[in-house]
Amino acid sequence: MDDKVLGLDAGANDYLTKPFNSRELLARIRAMTRTQTTHANSELQVGNVKLDRATYELSTASGTYRLANKEFQMMEMLMSNPKHLISSERFMEKIWGYDSEAEINVVWVYISYLRKKLAALHANIQIKAIRNAGYTLEEIV
Image 1 (spheres, rainbow, N blue to C red):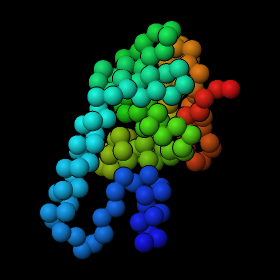
Image 2 (image 1 turned 120 degrees about the vertical axis):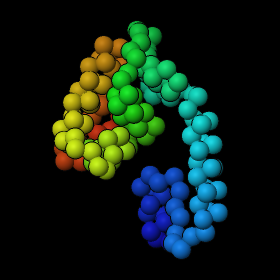
Image 3 (image 1 turned 30 degrees about the horizontal axis):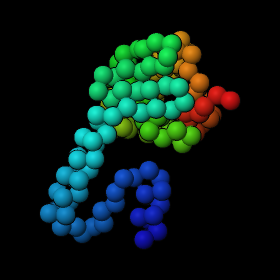
């Protein structure tokens, strides 16, 4: 039970213990797919910034940028979890994949792209770096 609670608190959407029934696994996959499809048609908003999941557009009243795929995925992770720390390793795992040959510094490069776009849009949110821990999205006060 402690492992389940720890996993869910750490950001997991579900937890399936072994041994499991394949019918249960498939039902859980269908349920998660339905949830993701529902979210895929919506906008995320943090502060004065909106991220349109359908068009990959990041916008404020000042303008709009269409994000590249990896930029979009990173921004979506940050905006879906504002004020939560996301490690570089987690970005690598979720966006580039386990078997990617990309170096960890690619995360820093994409964070830099996103910061420039947020500044150009006069966003009232910023991506903060916590040394040796990761990144978090926070509103500017």
